[in-house]
Image 1 (tube, helix red, strand yellow):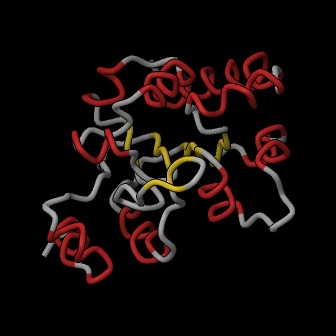
Image 2 (cartoon, rainbow, N blue to C red; image 1 turned 120 degrees about the horizontal axis):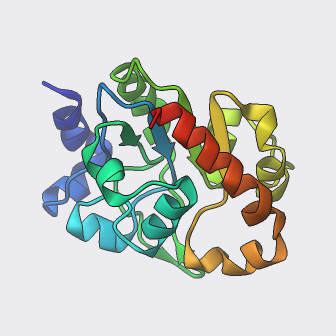
Amino acid sequence: MNIFDEIVNDEMNKTYTQNGLKPIYAVSKNARIVIIGQAPGLKVQNTGIMWNDASGERLREWMGIDNDIFYNSGLISVIPMDFYYPGKGKSGDLPPRKGIAEKWHSRLLQEMPNVKLVILVGLYAQKYYLHLSYQDTLTQTVKSFKKYLPKYFPIVHPSPRNNIWITKNQWFEESVIPYLQKKVKQTLDY
């Protein structure tokens, strides 16, 4: 049984499988960049296409790549902290379920021997991969992104819900995004 089938048949995912939903992730053995974010949104879960929403458009813009490179090159992989849409909460989507990354991420990452850069989108991925403390904030982490290079590059989630954060933290678009684009270009070697 391959990993995809194991995820589908995992007891943790039984309800999703019974509802005909498939896990949302993409792993390519040729990937040089892995994007690790929260969990798919409802639109992404319904279409089965990762980052197929306003957040995805902004993410590709921030990375300086087009849809073809993102979806068709095999150079970009995507592993969310949860493979399924977690549902709606009071102020946005619910957080990813616990235990998914611990159970599956290392196995999926082993399938990608050429990865040079892991873009950590949002605080859930950053806390897990950077082993941040409870006190560490997203703003602090993103502001000190160079500290985590060359392997990890933490960024804020590109959701329109974060427009206020982006406006308040202009340094992000002025200095972090250009650095991200340069790093992505070097990593993809185009």
